[in-house]
Image (cartoon, rainbow, N blue to C red):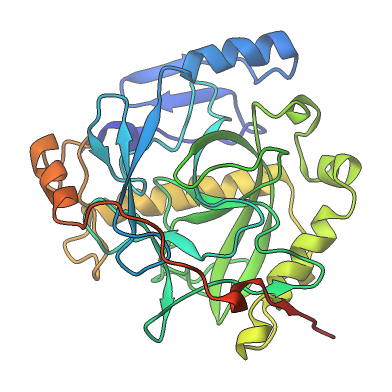
Length: 333
């Protein structure tokens, strides 16, 4: 069965430059890095725009952020937003959950209809990631790749652990501080294999293709060249960020060594295939696969989607944050 964009096949650039589409095959030239070509590519996907609709009060458990397409139709950031952002097969859509330097642990709610972005909770309280010196909040724009899924039923061949049941996490390293709910066009640079409480939790390193330095940053080695110290800080942050909450330091596959873009693209491709299998499961174990665009058994129309939003509280003033959110923590490993 064809599920629209889900039928597209991601092929690693090192293997071939042919991008498989459900209606046939098309020869695609490799993504060029010159400014003129980058501007041309930008025009190709500039028509695909998204907007947000917030409900409830920020900094409370009632807050929800929904995403709508350019026609005002509610879309699922898990299922409806295409993984691929253009026809090169090398530019991807990223859903921004957490802007850089912020602490609120926002995430796509994989269990609710249309998967709004909400704030995670722990023991009934809103979750904020602590500031672990010298880091303030998240040190990248943090988000997810749509139409990917880390399968909790499969042992990852690289980590020996099962997937964490979420879309792939993305760390965007460009200069711009993104906005919550923003959809960025990014290219993959590499990955870090985090083992988070016994689960595989890949972190895909990317850069916004509109970033001024993006043409010069194409692989993991370019990060160290143009962002010296960032890879080391990334591994350190991921290792220690849960320690102030009483958790042990996180572990990594490959001793924390980041892998290159070719390796990372294979992870993206695999998890996209896992997502396709999720859509076909009779029992999704609580994950919502409701969507408005895939034309499958779980697709709903725009009126029903809007009705789901309307069940949430209207947007109101943010609740004040507790001063503990700005507390510094000092960790000695």
